[in-house]
Length: 348
Figure 1 (tube, rainbow, N blue to C red):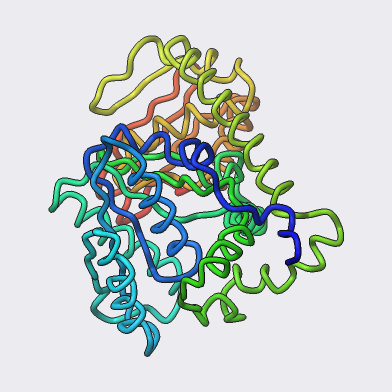
Figure 2 (figure 1 turned 180 degrees about the horizontal axis):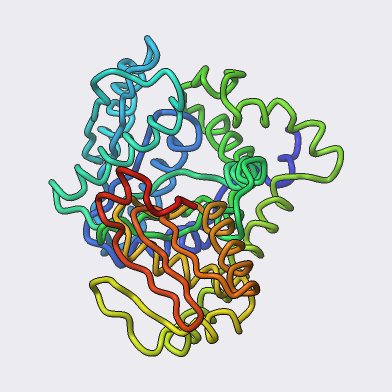
């Protein structure tokens, strides 16, 4: 019998405790299980972890059938067959309606999370768990780098976040996909293969095709994930600094309703990164068109700096907010409907 490949050893009970430690704080947990190798491994590992504990959350497996492939219905049913002997409740949710011709993967992801969190609210689950791996972290880092993301985006996937008060957990984020595959092959547990993972229409698939060349150059998933982790840590540090400096820049706590007004002198005195983040917070609070894009915030800030240096006033809209700068103050307020419709205030 040949020795196991490095990194393919069976998971110990101590490792499972380390992976799933934060699940014990929840009452009912949804496991997102597509039937692919990663999520199938998640189902088995989470079940084993829970089985060894006297108390802990109840586990519910959920499969989202995106109805994009002929085999998706059968694959969803197979997850139910795997979950039943484990004593795990299983739900199948379907993404219905017309599918977009562009941005299909992004739309599918949004629909998937919408369905998962909708079910969580319906059945009283307080956490949703996905099977993102170390490889997913590396791929996400490269994708966001290619798209010009800022520091927050390059921090990539976080282990724990939340949506509308429901936790979103990714316990396998530090585990290589190869180890999960080795576990399934060793235990002879079948899993589905999603053809979209190799579809060249999608950026993630194209990056996977380049993976061998990237590994040759040292861009292994572990190093990419480490870079993402370090950038996330730096982003957290900057955010904490913004939390401390914002009251001094803004002259106290901002009112919940716009307009927001703060000293131009204090605003331009801090480093650009801090000022841009303060500006972004103000625009997002005052506006009504969702979070402002980083690139547009940077363009607006550059125009504000130029106006400050030349002594000119500036008045522009961004993400449903109106930003007004004069010699003494920066004011951010909800943009009037006429400004949005007629463009009277120049957009950033």
